Length: 66
Image (cartoon, rainbow, N blue to C red):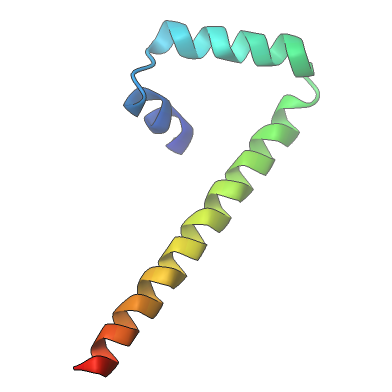
């Protein structure tokens, strides 16, 4: 899971992630959490695709200058 690895990278352990999840559950409610998770996943996917496109454009530009 990408989100868990990002949180682990930020130094958050299991207890902290559980506390954040419970706070989100209280704030948004159980019905909104799946929708928020889908939106977050879609945003991360779009960001990855955009960075991949930029990387490919830079590499293509470097190949053309050689």
